[in-house]
Image (cartoon, rainbow, N blue to C red; front, side):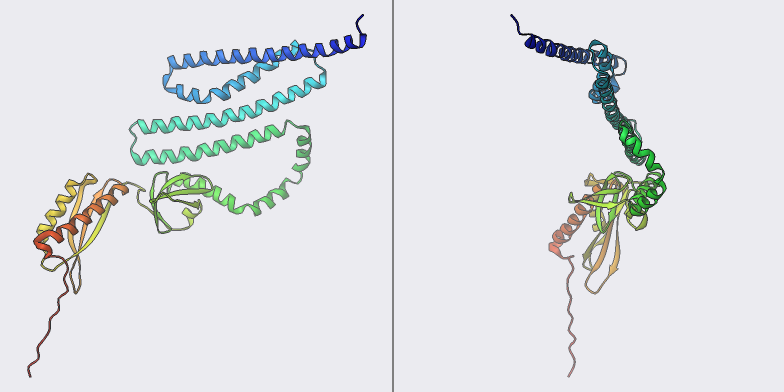
Length: 357
């Protein structure tokens, strides 16, 4: 004869095991449905608009989780749960949906920015306009993502009754808190406002070549609070955004990346200038960095020992100009050293005057 206590225990736990298996089965079924649905959407996108397939691929994970969370609550009627448990489950779904929606919005903004940047790179837009648009897109992306995070955090916290109750009481003292926070974070707020100013006026853009703090570098990253300058030796110089509104700096590519560079060499007073100009012209024409615009040699200065000659040349961008200047300097020094056995290199002359007795 079966023990009635044991029978009651089996019946008690058996019902819960059935409910657990039903819930797990429904979760697996809905996930498989979501996978089939997203694969069908991907096939449709591939046929209709193949150019946005990479964007959909980047969003597939948050989209799948979001659809799965939307379908899961439909299975609540399959099991009998106490009302308190159902309320907790519904609250959990609300929190999960908020977090996934925040994730989806964040990734959607990033993908939209990436698509815009790719189209800028392929639509033939000139370099200056492309970098201006890229800077605006980067700052707008961060601004929208920041807004999504703030709104998402607010919606997440509002899911909890305790937070809602505290929030109502805090509204009365919001003015005082705002003043205190404003005083404590005035530099941060100032940098944020400076970032918006730079996005609008654009004294610098991503990719600009600058001289800042006596360092040569390129604007690598521009945020609301700081700017990253990649220096020529791969170091990263990080400066607050307000620096570029309060202090002078050099922007070599503000309107055009084309630049003119100079090279100074010293030569003997008897150097044949026409022959040296011809050599400079040959050096420029043989160098792929030269843009065929400026190539000139003049006497810049005369001192007691030699002539100071200045060679000017042009290139389409700062990096090419640097290499061009190096090559021209080496070529002119080599020409002075090899022409007539170095006769035209600078020499120190000494004259003695003999006095008559």
